Image 1 (cartoon, rainbow, N blue to C red):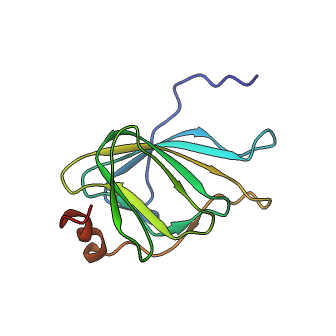
Image 2: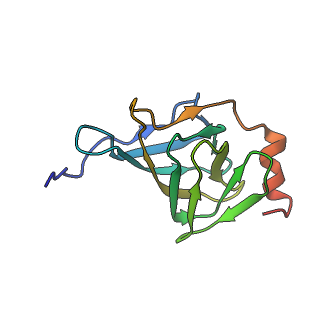
Length: 137
């Protein structure tokens, strides 16, 4: 058993990965014991990830607020507490808060054999993001 006591530092989401204000609490980092990476991510209204992929997929568990998730070329879906979203390996996608609500989720992903859990792409444009607040969600 490995026990990690609470008290780690909350980090600001890097501007390269996110648009807007985002805070990350790391839960688990892949290491010699497990390939699982996990974090509790909090998005301020309007904040979102950049487009990205995961080599072994990603599972999101929404813990608070209202947000959006979308895959490249797909519909923007509204997500709420208790919702679980599975993103397929290699699927280009983004997720974040709505324009007027905070959203938080636990993000879980598995590292590949090279230790990679994510590949970051370009930022989601304001016009692509605003499709979520136009009644499509």
